[in-house]
Image (cartoon, rainbow, N blue to C red; front, side, top):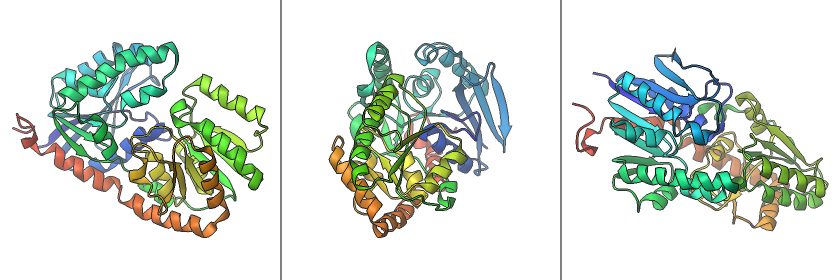
Length: 385
């Protein structure tokens, strides 16, 4: 008998256009889960890239792309998207739902569907909301945080991507919690090193939580010691107002020749950026795990990152990279300059980073989830009859 599993998650419609760490980790996880012949695997994802629902079968996996109206997510996630996903769940009639992220859509919808569910907490809405700005940020906080709280209080089984997340949410949870991190795709280990001297790389959405203004301030310091330094920024604009504040800082401080915005790239474009950078820099204010750090380490790149959230569980200070306190711009600049000037240290961090990233193989992660899917004793009513 096969176990019919539905993954409710962000998943790319175009596999060459993977947006963000969650989508990247889901692609790798699904690639491994499909190897278990005792699973019937369905993926449900909501997307604004199509005008009508599509069902696509790839390698025996059934992908259900649910069309989301081209309206603000705040509106669609609470109405059209939830109803359309619930309808598809009932049509599939799964043995188990595995929802990724709590609110506003997948985790909340899974619990409201009435089917047995595992919820994976990737990001903590309550923490991320601290960086939401303006009236829209206020409205989202009032709606999404209570939805997240509902999921945490009602889920019988949760997985979290780092001990940091477990520590933050456990006081609200009544169900079992397991730490199962996100993994890194094998192709990042295959990236050839074509380092361009003094090239820095940041990858992530352009928004206040990523603290990119601190990175620009650090580059403004580093350029005085290393005039050939260049920063490449890869990622889509999530908050236009914040993006314009970065542009204003660049222009005011004559940094245009030191900073290049590359935008949201295809996977091949992203891999090229990893290949060519000397140091990967990640100055976030809050991160549950930081999948992009694993991708950088798998590519053999040393890391400078902030000592916040789940990052210290990935980046070992003085072993795989350097950690600085959030907001310490001078410390950030100092660690960047130190690594750019010290090739032996970069090689040390790179080698150790590759070994650390191997511990996050999707094969290992998928095996943990597979065992969880079949551990019926976790529920009051067993998952399997």
